[in-house]
Image (cartoon, rainbow, N blue to C red):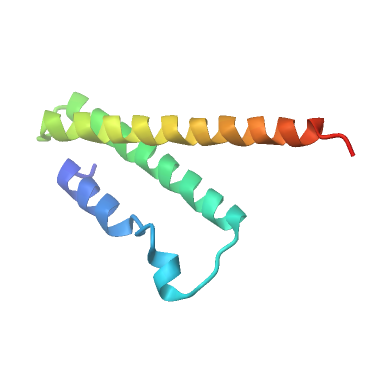
Length: 99
């Protein structure tokens, strides 16, 4: 199992900057951005699960770091669900437009 410190540093090192694509001059599609975001949320969920498992199996982990990892994963998931709900709402509005 990975320690929480290792997990938190890997999150920080793999998290892209919001302006990274703008600064590099590359263009990514909305689909790619969405898929990458979902993968990041999934990774955060797995890391939080690993942290909780490490804490419950008696490994030497800081409970505050475990709680922080779980809260970050929860917040990321909630934000993803809100984006999904808004996208579905817009899709329904577009469907209702009469031509």
